[in-house]
Amino acid sequence: MAKEVAIGKRAKISEAQQYMILSVLGASIFLGVAIALVSHFVQLISFNAKVIGGQDGAIAAYSKVIKSAGICTSPSGSVYSDSEIEACEPDSIELSEIPGTLRANILEDLAANQALNSVPKEDDSGCINPDTAKNFTYKELNNIYNKANTAEELAAASQLIKSCSALRVIPDALPTFKNEEALLASLNKLFVVSNWTPESLSPSGTTSAASIGKGLNAISVSLSVEASSATTTTVLNNIERSIRDFNIERATIEWGGDDSLILGAEATAYYMNKSSITPTTKTITTESGGEEQPVNEDDELDEL
Image (cartoon, rainbow, N blue to C red; front, side):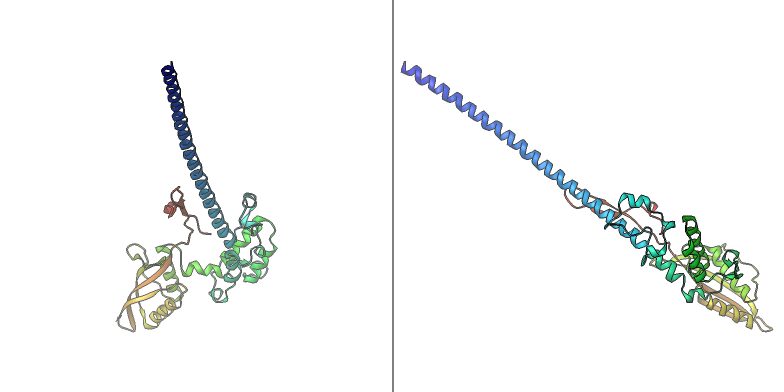
């Protein structure tokens, strides 16, 4: 009898031990799953925080560009809100609303530059003031801009400043793209001013371009002048005085008889690559903050 009781107790103890082992095993599994889920949610929260941080950085960068360029008036906060971007109309903004910006500096300071404005203007009916029958002065152009009320009037006044103020000289002095026809037209203008007409002027096979660094490019062009010594000297002086730089690197001069000179020269003109803003892409992962890489050239933003 006592033996049967002892066997029963052992069976109950063994069963209790089994329940205990199963309970511990279940608790361990539950704890492991809980730890894995907590770790996953921590990584997810951390990743989302990095994404939000990246978005905030991009918004701040774009806001800085928009503000410094003068595309929109200053934001009410540190960055532009969606409503401020939607309400922004660049053509309806007056310069007094965007002081110190790139746009204001160009349309106020650079457009009024006396050194650039001293370059003689070509006859252009669009730049003639109907009240004075003379070319617009910057003061007159600025008055037109200040009196503009609508977006269309401001856009027209802004275009008038670009076309008829000192700003017109800049693309003539240093173009933003290779244009062989315009280059030879500039040379032809210098020849006409010098009262000398070349026999022919053609871009075919006469020019080549090469990059010399930092966005500056060179175009080589051959010059040939056969005229009197006085005319040849005048041509060279006008080339030297030209607003567009022509750097004569090699030249040969021969006597042609009867006070005639034959000038052959190799000259270099220049143009600058168009300025643009190149956006970058930033890849954010759970392991690191991400790396920034420039986008393809086809995705470059237009110049401001």
